[in-house]
Each structure stands twice: as structure tokens, then as C-alpha cells.
Image 1 (cartoon, rainbow, N blue to C red):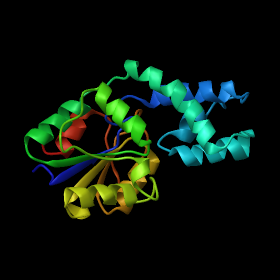
Image 2: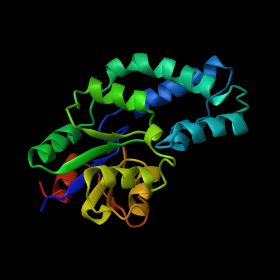
Image 3: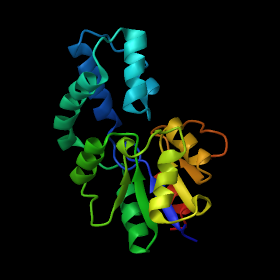
Amino acid sequence: MTPKAVFWDMDGTLVDSEPLHEAALVAAMRNVGLVPPADLHERVLGVAAWPVYEMMRDEFGLDLPFDDWIIRKYEHYLPLVERLQPRPGAIEIFNELRARGVAQAVVSNSDRMIVDANLRMVGLTYPGMKTISRNDVREGKPHAEPFLRAAYLADVDPAQAIAIDDSWPGAMAGLAAGMKTIFWPEKPMEGPPGAVVINSAAELRAQLGL
């Protein structure tokens, strides 16, 4: 059976934007004289802008206010959006669920301007579409609030919803919200305890009853 509601992470889950975010972050760091660490990708995957900023400030000596820093990062990111590609199979599954009348929402730790730019670039926009950005909640992932907000907007019990995410913080947020949580990482790895780990769009289809 298909679920009553499916809530999707965006970066790395619906769209292959993580390389763009990393490239923009590296460029912004170098622009202010910081040296990106070798494990930067692992440290920032799925993490919202503010905790990343705190890491830059506390560990790397960034001395810019947050608003100045995030503007610099987005100035590097937005020109890269033209290269954005969907994650193979993901948007096709989204559209099939939509055709079946399954409630859906995009639940992201990114700012509203990034959510809108990414989804518009891959053609995933339509009237009434529900999207939750980091601007729409008090606490981002791994807190439950973003996925609970999605359940509220879709008017479904969280226990009847499925959360899909590619990062540990995102999967932890889905679990904290009381949802069946599918962890679909960009490369095979263990997921948070309680999450269903998959490694392909075919496995995702099976989990969603398609």
C-alpha cells in the first residue's frame, strides 16, 4: 500500500545539490581567507546554515556576522543552480505519488531562497505545493519540528507519514517526529537506529508500495 503522506528532504534527496553547496562553501571560505578541511563534506552534510556558520566561527576563525557570511555563500551558490540535476529516480517517484493523490511536502534545512531556486530549476513546482524551509521553523533538523510542520500542513498524523532524507540529521528529524523514516544516503552507509536504509530508487519504490 502507498502511504498517506510522504515528506521529502530536498538537497541530496530530491536534487543532487550537495556538490553545489560544497563548492559554494569552499569558495566562500577561500574568499575570506579560510582553508577548507579535507572532511568538510562529511561535517556539513544535512546541517543548516547557522550551525555551519558557528563551526566556521569557532573552529576556523571566521570573523564576519552571520548575515554577511551567508550572503557570500549564496552569491557563490546561486550561479551554480543552472547546473543542478535531479537525483536519479526521485522526481519521477514524487510525480507518481502525486498522481495517486498521496500528500507530499519538501522539508529542507536550506533557506527559502535556495528551496525555491532549486525546485524551480528542476521543474518541481505547482500550485498548492507544500514546502518547509529553515525560515519556516524555529528549530531545523535534526529537531522534529520541520517534519511535524509538514504533517500539520498536510493534515496527517505523523505516524501515517514517511520521511525520506539522505543525511543523518534529516533522518534523525524524521524519527524524532514519529514517522517511518527512509535513509537514502548518497553512498552506502549505516543509518540512524530505527531508520530504513536504502541505496537505490528501486528500493525506494518498493518501500513506498509503487
